[in-house]
Length: 307
Ligand SMILES: O=C(O)CCC(=O)C(=O)O
Image (cartoon, rainbow, N blue to C red; front, side, top):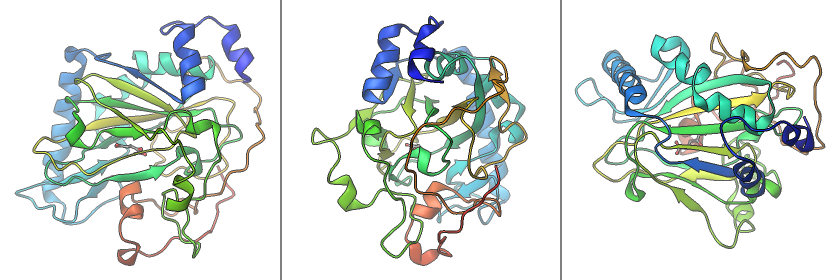
């Protein structure tokens, strides 16, 4: 949908000024949006996942572990496929104010893409290098978005999400290094050309929700504090944005329509997007790719043609 078509429908849960802020600045923040009653069962579900990982000695399809994870001292970087891992997570994806906000920003027809939990464990939880989400999952237009929901309070020293306001209006950068190996991160010399005012950090109490545009440059530092920083990461797409590539996390609900109706058409935007590697044989996590490339099988430019 074109922006003027999205704006032609009155928003239902946010106001027009917030919509305009999102499209001008590439993000919005809703402090304490989700109440404690809703957070408590989500935290319990996250705890159940942590308990199960005590059996793991290495990362699995769903769980990405820090290198120093042990049964006694579990340290998770990410759990993906949450909607399949625990019954508790689908409600926040489909029956909450979050998909309503997505519909106010993307147009009435919205698809669920994925839900993950980035733990950012206390005492060194991994950084997320600067990146643009659209480069991980190019679509026929840039109408995809990522929400973060804080399960606990997030302060500056816990490695909060940081983003460059307005960067979604700039170039879409390569996330490969000079040798053509996928790093999942914007190159340093490209970053030097972005936003002279620098990034802003998104902090706030538990229940705070942020949302950013698929082209907004964002990342987060290591968590060197003594408090973990568990956040739910939810992504959605406008239903008329068709993916060019296989999803990283094809859970059983990937692509399910959570608001509106099937549009019956695809919308295209003129975009120049570098294609990611082919994820159809499996994906670990952004953390694993951004880690020292020497520890990994490098993922070269090998693209999938399927959806
Ligand atoms: O967890 C974070 O701070 C950043 C999340 C993110 O950008 C991602 O997982 O793609």
